[in-house]
Length: 235
Image (cartoon, rainbow, N blue to C red):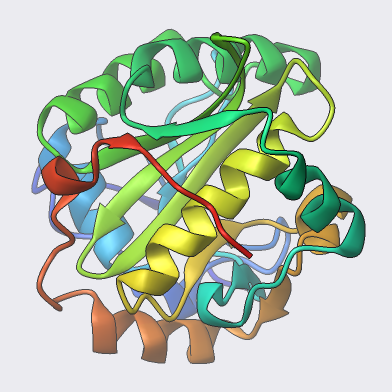
């Protein structure tokens, strides 16, 4: 069994993801901080932070990895019907701080894994142009959304929320359409759950995940300033 590694002060140094523990699956390292440099270095290597308030910062790279291919995404019949109603509006990066606030409230029901420290770190990444949100509005009210990181032409999903049925799914379709148009071959969903699997996510062995990651992480970045605002969804 591999031993858990405590990180050094160098924000770019992480153990190889193949050295992650098998129990718990994917636990790779502990310690460090949530600086922009360390977080970007982590995601570039297929690693993400996940911890509670009473724990040190924990870094993970599970095997297998939950992902979705936006170029092959197709909404279910019921979701496509909901899209055709066209009684909602999708927007990009109009309410990032509200989205992460609502995701933090939702995470409190499942353990406080979006800590105040983590929220501050991702707000900083948004200000730096790495973190982005997709929002669903109904009658002008924010009813659902998601956020994550964009590096190269890949997207690393972090969390989603909904206050109205299907609102997070509608935001997810906006993400899928946007990333498919950008030629993104993979959106990282980190860990599987029934909701993600119902949207077409699947589990990919870590070595295959790393191959796609290494091929696309240094591709020209997506122009999110141009994308900001209304996000049309047509299926």
